[in-house]
Amino acid sequence: MQNALLIGLSRQMTLERQMDVIANNVANANTNGFKADHSLFEEYLNSNAREDNFIGRDRQVSYVQDRGTFRDIGQGPMEPTNNPLDIAINGGAYFAVQANGGELYTRDGKFSLNSTGQLVTADGNLVLGNAGPITFQPTDHDINVAPDGTVTVLEGTAKTDSIRGKIRMVSFDDPAKLTKLGANLYAAGSANQQADTKSTLQQGYIEKSNVNAVGEMTRMVEVMRSYTAIANLLQQQSDLHKSAIDKLADVPA
Image 1 (tube, rainbow, N blue to C red):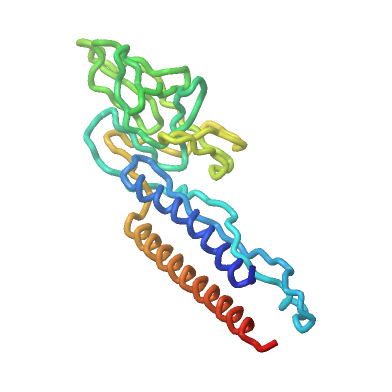
Image 2 (cartoon, one colour):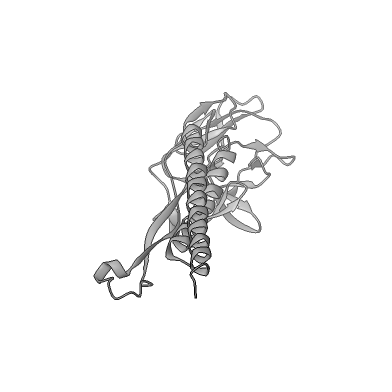
């Protein structure tokens, strides 16, 4: 196969994977705490030119290689909800939750109470405090979450606050190493975790996705146009190859 066809196909393969990444971002544009992914590409050189008149770098054929993706860990916009159980993180920390038989992490702070009075995520995973799951009593009211994560309530007719725990915030030395598990959850992977003392919590707010929906749709159109342009180029190369074969076949013996 000609080098032009191989180069075009390599680019089409990377565009297909880039489209998958963009489509996932668009699908999660309204997912609380979602962090957008972006594609990485690099040049891959292969010495396939064999003619003697190709010298030095001219002998190398430049392909497109899909190196992987990187995550945009930037802060998403804060949306007020006036729900005391909605909590947003200001900073780079993550909530620690109990899920799938272990400890996982999320930025989605849309919490609620389960039937036993425990603080849980939208999917029912237990939100962990410094001393385990945070549990409320049936008579608790006026829930307050301090910026450092301390949860206090008024119990019954009491006039003084009662502490129900402290929401655990965790940060990582390299958040890019966190493994996405779906359902807005991350596993630590090879990242080292530590207690976060710099981030703060904001009660009554939800952190929205940091996906720029307009930008992602623009990139989607660009990818589609690039794919179509390369498809046309490959068709032209194929037609030229076919034409050359037909003309060579007509040469008198």
